[in-house]
Length: 207
Image (cartoon, rainbow, N blue to C red; front, side):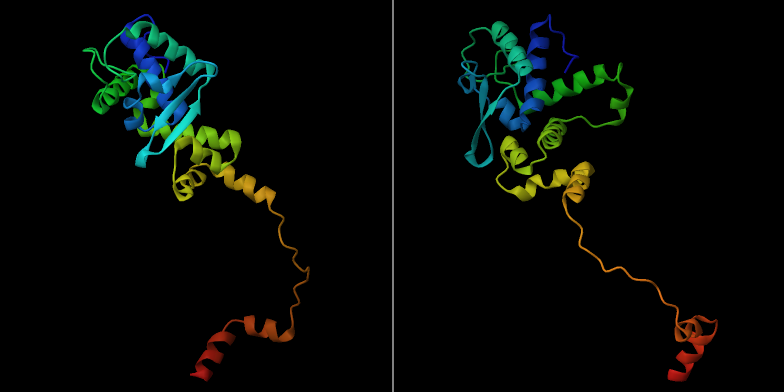
């Protein structure tokens, strides 16, 4: 998110797109489908997301996200297309266009963060990262589902497998059952059965 040049028009746009994609946990189709009218900056900044199955969700925005979106609106210009994000030709941003932008900035970021060279950074990875961030902050799968626009909680449960700390916290919150204490008693019969050859002889005899 720090890689795009904030002194260039395309850099301001790229930073706004990447920041919003992560902060909102957006699918790439949701990101490029955003309209200017979907963004509300007053009284509280929020954005309307149209997800799968025509489901809508309204997400509040971080101050940082609002700031980069304001910067983009200031340089976007009065281009007569309803989409929030546009390409260099003034046309709506496409899926392949955003994927290219993300790859470009990932390669640049590798110069300062070499571990990125071994990772696959995609729009869906940004969405997963957002989900884990919300889960770690709230410890509530229902809130993750609401944030991501999941219709089925089973879809959200994959994040408990990705974040083992959630399982450990669940273990801490459960009171273990009481077990009766006892001591091991070594009887003569048990000792005899453990002697070498005893088990084999008894098996042959039974055969």
